[in-house]
Length: 283
Image (cartoon, rainbow, N blue to C red; front, top):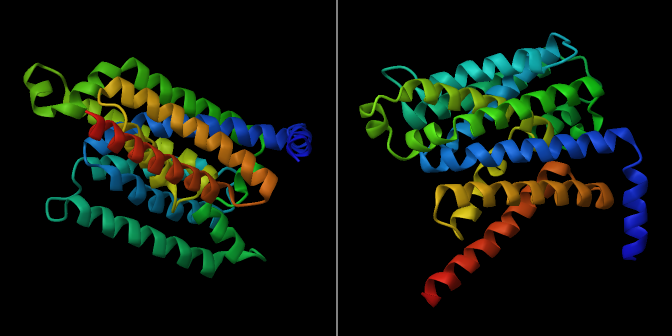
């Protein structure tokens, strides 16, 4: 049985679109895990969910305009909204209220536009694919793969280059500013990278499941490790492993890619939570 599945998997990986999906999935998972630790520690976990709905609305507009590459519109719109949310939005509407209003409005308007202007013969399938990922990652063309890879490497490079500054802003922003660090500028960097990650993750898990891809690996790692570096490394390993296994299982079993990856993250979180409790009781 195992040999048959391995042979079947080897056959699938002979197709370029399967290799493209696997490469993009691993890169997106790695990017998501790196900034996920910072978002959780800064209490910005819901920003990923809000931005995913913004990305859905922008993608709906791009689909109505019949743009060949939706990222051209989705990325700048999501970046702008990320900056606004991270800086607290307007003076009258702040925090979770601003995230809730923006996410619900974007989701509703995006679905409305797709219903009114879309001429697709399978509108419900298109919406489901955008929301839950479905098999959209298996339909990536070489140009989209190159764009995703370039953005992923850029996000990873930014995190590595500014690691110590991101660490400082994450744990004590006021002290960082007192020492002369431009915390506002690095918050802007974090916002832009978050937006890029959300747009990339749309193809992998869909707009409704992006938060899980960002938050679950970080929370799982925090149950086992305590230092920022250890949690970040462990989060990256968990995220990449869950994405890889999720894509493979979805190919073999015919399950939705996004939901399968999230299910794997949930399972790993439960195991890490149990290990954390056992470790705490042992001490």
